Length: 247
Image 1 (cartoon, rainbow, N blue to C red):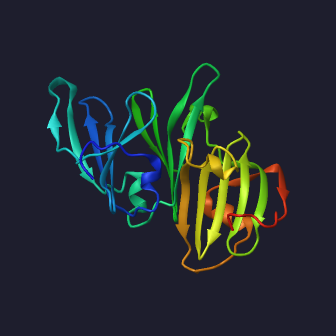
Image 2: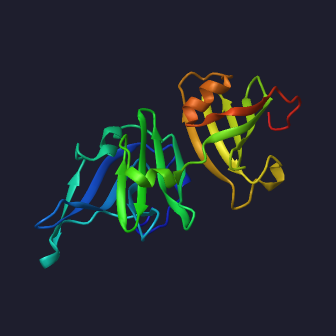
Image 3: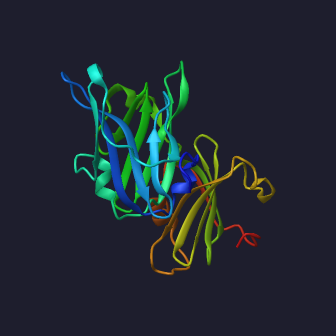
């Protein structure tokens, strides 16, 4: 991987977090603000997370060193700071990466990403030139305008044996293909359940994990818990559809 190579959210899935580097701007009369975040990932190297204005972009990039900004303060760089929430996940593998959308009725944009690890999840957000790392904390009034498309309105089981698999649609209408085989679970986004549409630009991997069991089947509720998905209270769930060609 060369520096400045653009990366996509799906590139992070299945990568183990090795180290966390952060760059902070210090002002003489204020609290430090986060400028850059690098996640050092196995097989990818350091990945820079930054905000161009709103949202978060990713690229392969080596961390820079500290520097002075004269009257604007200085920038210092730290590794694996315990005060950075994502540091608690060092040594764990990224299980899924989900988009966070912002919509206040006047403007709408992709605001950031949720990274899910076996031990929990972290949100990385770009809001009005500010890069934010949020773990458990509530971000105030902006929370009402943040949304992840992780609630399923309809699920049809297409195989109950090996593999266990389902067609699912979120409350926003996004189609997802859920599959579990030999202990590995995956969630894929596609335009529709028609496999002829699966090579389009709308197709991407949402989640992948291995539970170490080499198991051949899993209950839907357990699959969803591993994948970071949930059922709507009035979700329409259908039994197995026989003879699915993807089995």
